[in-house]
Image (tube, rainbow, N blue to C red; front, side, top):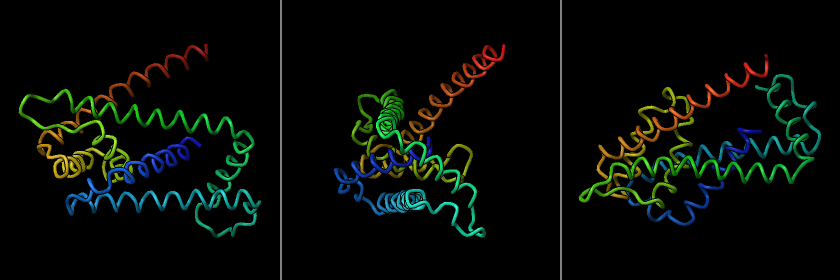
Length: 202
């Protein structure tokens, strides 16, 4: 359900960004290609969700062919959907929390970029960062590299360097700095998790 809410929230945010700033994104061929790639991936994920909703809603989970790939995962996901579907108010609240979580994540990268600004260097606006981040998150979700390292920097260079005229070196540095901030807080979270799990066990 966490992954489902994450996917739906990215689809929602990407739809808003593209509806408002598609003309900005199609400013260069490279940017447009990345946009279409991300949209294709999001559309594929969204179709999988629609399929899950269909088979779960119409009680077809146990009628799926046994040779179907990932049949066990599909049944487990469908059962989770049926369980959570009985609490729609909770699901709506969880979806809104996920939206806020994604926006906070995107703003981290904006702050990382702002920390590199000087009087002569052009850096992305908050609107620019909120526009590209759903696309970046979608493409870096593909397991091409560890944590999207390298891929994220290239995407920032293309998506910010061309339409926003941010220097390629600074665009890549902003991506790396944003990732470092997130990784650092993840380590804090991991430490807190291990500490409280130990306390709970005791």
